[in-house]
Image (cartoon, rainbow over all chains, first blue to last red; front, side, top):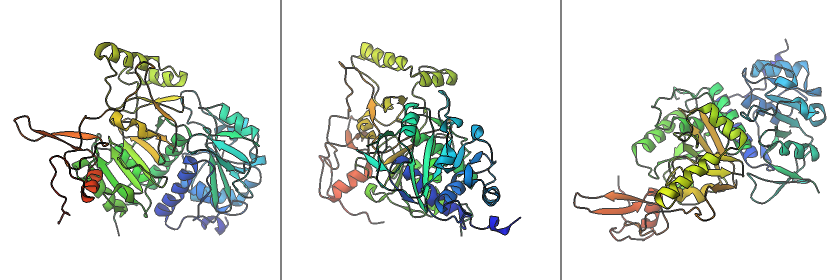
Length: 189
Length: 289
């Protein structure tokens, strides 16, 4: 076992997790806004933002799927040591983490049921950067309209059409975070 | 050094509540089940709101707690002291200075901003519960968007009383999908439910969390020929003279004496401090304690 897995967690978990959750909540409540989230130093290729999201939300009760390049021994060790989250395939995942291409196709993940639409996967999508360009967003949490550099348009429109079922997305880049819940309506240009 | 973990709850419990809050924000108006914990206060005293607040608080927050609009009632004081002790957060009675407000049965009169969070204590989260006692059935009704029963209830109000008699916990429809109980706020507050702040609802005994993101479309149920009306006592506040705030009727003696005062104590105090005086009010004096 490499000692790298033992480092890079929250140093004062209760308050750092509270600050990190506030950032995640603000992002999810206001789709399109970009929040700063810090406190974690996960092994590459994970971004600090993705690491902080994992530390804040994952534990032994949340099966996690690692997609593509995110699925390395170092990342597995780090997540297992710091959260205890079981690493699973897509069909059983509460959370999934990876690049957009690695996470596809979206049809692999649970979207909830009519009685329990909350039992769906939250995807943590690693991005090169997050900017206020590209897709136009409207819906709950947005006063008029917002813009966000989404990796796709049609895929999110299909997801929104499933409402109230569907997947929810967190986008991470460096120490920045944005979110796109299923309730957001997405338009291209 | 406090003997409590920050904000009382253990970290795993907070993570579970936080995950429920995120799903609640993603599906506005849908009640997310959560594993409500025993709190050091009885059910009915705001255990749902307290757990949601505990999962949301950060050390930099300024907390305000109100019970029926008042900062100085037993429930509000005890919850405020609870978080002063377990989270060492700053507290205030001023609406504008608070970053997180926990409320029982009122929305503050002063409009909230994007930087604020409003946490409601909810006794019965299911708006259909008094019409259909079975959870299996009400869950199916939400899944199928089968809300005819609620409209029948409102119609029966009209046929019996000539108007929709529901005065509090008035049902709303969220983003055209879920019918939601806004908790027992007076229907006077319903138009404020579309606001800039994040609204979170916690029901401890019933183990449900639901939410309204900012600017969510919230419509009070009504009929074309009996439109929704936000009502209040037809009176001005006797202390501060406000004509636009929700009023409590206070019986002052056993000979029919009464006065109407703002239910939002901070709103009334601020108005009196600014020199407004109602019909039975005295000039404002800064409290000296």
